Length: 79
Image 1: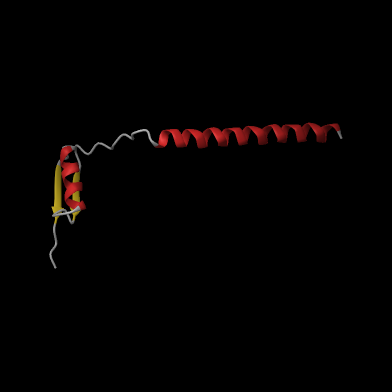
Image 2: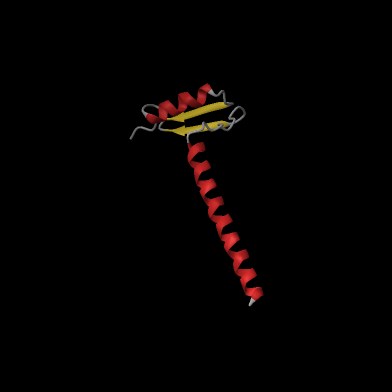
């Protein structure tokens, strides 16, 4: 019976540690959600944007062009 009690105490401690770790991870995730993320460098990349003639596609093309990629290709298809 003594062995079972020790095992139970160990399992309860592990359970409490896991709950505390989950709370800390959830809190850190909420705090760093608003932290600005680093963008991937696109300096040597070729970027293809469809629908880049107007609207959101054009805005995306302009933003990528500011990051100085190797080449930005945007297509506007009229149908």
